[in-house]
Length: 602
Image 1 (cartoon, one colour):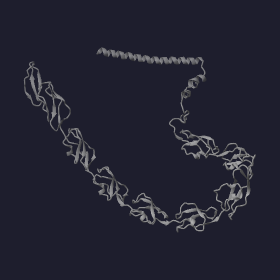
Image 2 (tube, rainbow, N blue to C red):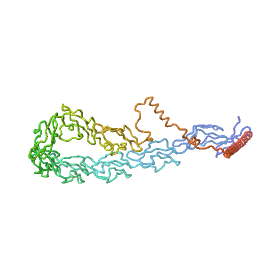
Image 3 (cartoon, helix red, strand yellow):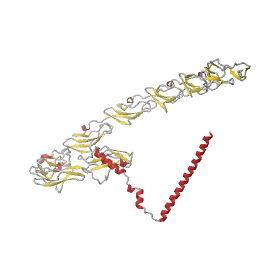
Image 4 (cartoon, rainbow, N blue to C red):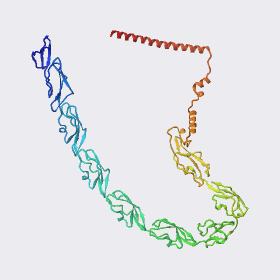
């Protein structure tokens, strides 16, 4: 190992020149001088390395350097630079705090916040610049607004979100007061004050029944300013006028809107032998329909009105004694409709009891003197009129008043818009009973109006279509909609359609592929049937393809010219393809030669 001799000190490079025994010059590095930093090593020999580099407090390496090396030219590399950190960022922003900080080094970013009762306006991220100063004017901490209820009398906070600058808050009024204004939302402005003159709280109205005698609240919504309330009168009184009151801004209800008038009394007290037919109300301005008691007939106008003087219409009618039961005049007879009033001038149809039949004209009239017209019929032994037990029926070629005697045969039929069930031809037996009977079922209503199913229609139904008992129809949906559910309807015995539970929904695939299920229970045989049908649907008919069609419809050209043209075409295609292949072979040969030449040169 050669001895190293110091020659001279070079101030600018901080190197020592040495001479080897052989006479060659080498350079040894001095200990590195790091500004605002230090190196934890005393080695100075050439090619030695130093680790443990660090910066003084409040300084940070400009970039990461794990070690530096002394090179033969007497210099250390790479260069290790210590930069001054930024100071505490709160010094740059009043009323601020540090939320998150890793370091104060140049290039580092700090997340800032504001102190309590202060709100941040701006960006809360600031960066330490190369000047060792934090970014300025990135944000500002402004004082929050105070209690908003201090600015608005009788107010209260409805939704308390925040009192920070630029935040909003919803207000209301205290109980017994109503908010008057276009908006109840306040905003905290940058001057730390809430929106001014946005609303005011007005005192509500009092009990409205205090202003109107004998009144009562019907619909108690609110007593607040600008609200409305519906009034009524107490029992035994009727409201005359407008029942809706409004609470005005002077905290008073609408005045003189109505008054409560006492109702009328019992109307039967004013009319002897009368009775109430339709008892709607005894209130002022209401009407009521009257009738007479049994055995009496009403003469005049039966409608009475309760007037504002709390009395009913006077002298509107009188009750004259009516007719009694006429069945007493004919043995084994009875009224066809016993509930029908037997008023003067009214006609009544008579019938005979079981085992007897009407002979003659069975109509009787109640005269004004409360007597009946003389009876023009009698009840003879025979079958009862079968029409009495069968609605919507009639007897073919029958004259009213003819008695139904034993061995008499008739043909029963149903009237129009009804359906006959049973045998219409019947005979009166000796026991005064018919051999058979029928029932007439009235037609069902129009299904187009009976059902209310959006987007659905009855398939094939028109104004002339049958609505008879037992007839069936199917619902279907309009275009682009699919029917869900069983759409079959049938006219039932009760002259009504059966209930259906269907709906029409938009098709999600071709409508012809959607609809009611064809199978309730899918067995192996059903599955095979569906599979066979599906195969047939998706199978390709080879006879219907374009190739098959051309073969079938195109004739073969046997002319020599056609064959020559085909041969020439094949030759031309072969020449073109051969030229392309030959060109590719030549290119491949040149590429291989160049590759071999480069390989031999290396």
